[in-house]
Image (cartoon, rainbow, N blue to C red; front, side):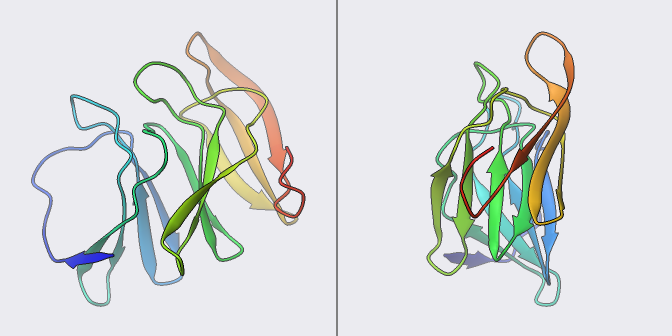
Length: 143
């Protein structure tokens, strides 16, 4: 992992930001030319940004959530199509691993953990807004 202190001076759109313990994880986005697969975290105590291993896929409008010691990046838009894929980041190993695909591709959706399950709610499928809900069980790696 690379530590650096800097202040971004350009806009990156459709990034997902998630606060986990004392760190703020920021994944994916759109820099005006392409969807990003970058991932990083900000430590407000040290005022430092740290780049972590890039995600396996480019993702804009991605759902990101911390759950059971990992960070999950699910769905999003890769510049061509909406994604049903997801991946899990292990902070100890600095690695991303795939998880089972959702049934419905989506971007720009709500994501939350409830009763020890990860829920994806609504979003955009590339044609229209959707209202379906999917639920991921980490113990079985199934939606």
